[in-house]
Image (cartoon, rainbow, N blue to C red; front, top):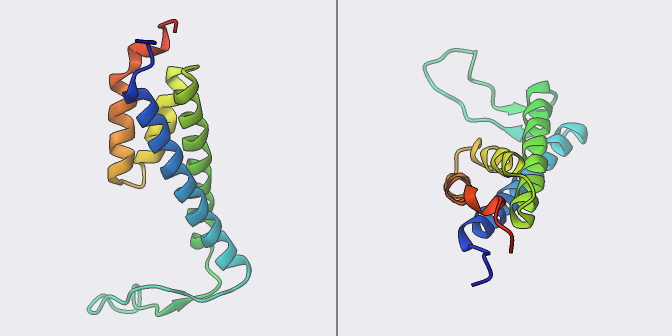
Length: 125
């Protein structure tokens, strides 16, 4: 056995996959704001005019959420690469947590896999 476990590699790959999706979605949200393409929001009956906005074209929350999601994606990609290289446990775990923040199954698995494989960072292979 060469000392390379599958859990850490799987956690790194999952972090990278989720990070790429976060980066794409965040970039699309920011692009929608900049080119002023209407972004549909759901209408909630019974909540009055606060939540009954049908189409939002010039709101700043879209660019803020998109930028935050893109930054989380970049950190998840860097952390996933760190996990695959086995260079820094802290960075790998931070990347997995950033993959977890939009609450998805792949992010949960990435955190679990990176956490379980903590001992592989100090091992020589």
